[in-house]
Length: 471
Image (cartoon, rainbow, N blue to C red):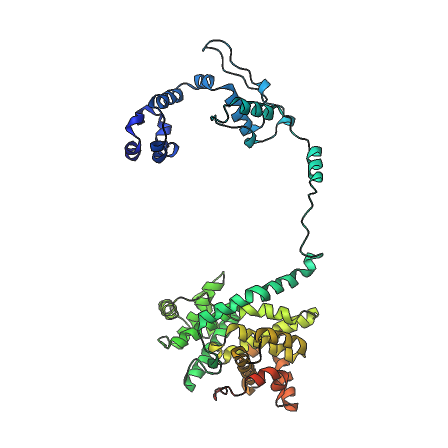
């Protein structure tokens, strides 16, 4: 009230005590001070308006013009004809005007047709005539509306293609690879800041640290499989783990690092977070203490600067599989999908995977799967898209990743890895056993099988730094 009292000019001579109680709180809204300073309204007219507000309801209704009442009712409930308004006759003590609304068949809501407030423009005789004619004009029938639409030649919008359901996947794929993929690659380069030659170097240096990282990755995969989490959760956990290794802080114990990496990724990606006891069973640990996990999460998040919204291979796998499986049947498509996921997760066992660009990691897994399933033409199409040009960093990195995937798949100890046993079940079509069998057969007959499958990539990598010896 003090704020309103200060802003109201003294020339208006309006006191808050004279206003009804229900209007005192709204005075600042109904009459903003800035507008009150700029308007030229006499104090007598304002005081007269307040006196009219304070009158009883019956007298206020008498004082309102019948045309204004008709206009208000027309704007709120439909059209009201001027002949249905009985104007008051006689002295001031005459009864209030009785309003009769039009029948429902004649009522049509049209607030814009009738002015609700009087103004110098609407008080002119010509405007009054136009308002009266608008009120008296009958509402158009549905047949008349249809006839007017037919005259304007209104036609429904045609779909994007003749059969939208049939071509929708094709249009989405063209939109992704034509527009979205360039922005994803650009954001990936800005986020990671990793030179091309680092694709062949591990994120840790010593042999002991490499074996320790492999053990942590194995425990994370085991807990991920035990808790039945999403694939994108595993990809984010691997990205967080390698990013922590790149900071070279290494202040956490290995089991705490494995638990916190997976738990942080779970809280970011999943809707239901597993309990600490369930997570400990999945990690193969008897018990994990809650305070240790909390402190480990704080240390990990500070080390990676809370950057959890980061690119992973899971953002690209679906679209690469869509590009490769255009002409496949349902069974071949499912086999390609499962084998691509297997090879992508197999790549996490490499100590160099922390330096791989996620798009090239996913592309290498898809290309390797297409080569194993004899889809040479589709592999060439994806290879041309992901690594254009005769030479370049993308081709060198892609070739380095393919060589490391071949080394992991040819390893004799692969049958003991958790990722191999995960894809050995019938629900995953035994793709790990199938991939191992195919690569053993091909390498037995042609030791340069990979070079022959990807001759362009192999030629572009001539003269580059060789793959690190420990791989």
